[in-house]
Length: 246
Image 1 (spheres, rainbow, N blue to C red):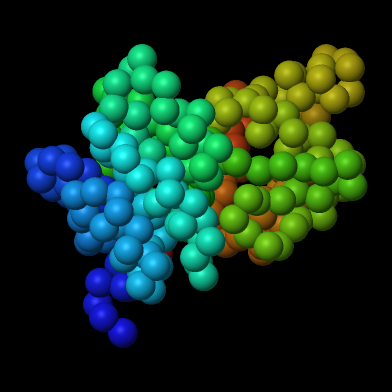
Image 2: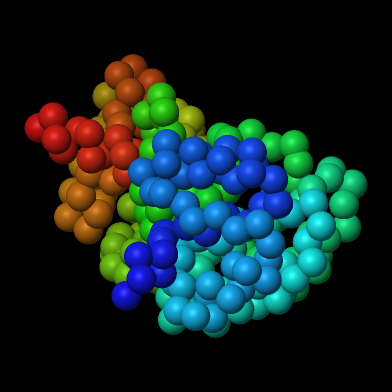
């Protein structure tokens, strides 16, 4: 198979400077080399001839053919993550591209951190994103009515007890901020927490084990001394670095 067909990323941008900027982004943040195209038609022909990228990033001042490219990317053997960059803040292309099948639309101007965050939001650990200096981030999990905890990009579910599910809901809602024992007691038990009561510590220990058994070191339930608990996700790049050091 031709090497170009195995690219993880294709970039569609008229300007060579924009192609280089976005290619550097993926190389730095994901360790991936990108295949650039100057127009949507050329990129679509690449897909139709067997190209199968994980990400299609479109940044066109004149987006002729962009909607067709997006629709083609949606029906490939490995469905691509498609991001469209709106060329101006007041543009009206967002709805058209989303209806064509784009996963997300980003409006100019944007920061690389925003682009990385949006890629992570849409793909999770499907992309090996490594944000420099990032130690932790808010975890994207859901708990259903049967107290099963699920992760968007993982098939396995974690069965929680009703009390564990209540605690996890509060930790997930916190967005990585510290949740005190008193806050947990007020919200779950409808009463004040009594100093020395270790009931939440016992549940937290069991939750940690279940998360570790299912997802390894991906998620952390941190006990913050004299404060409470903090729940967050360690980025893939950071986990790999920690595993290497261990």
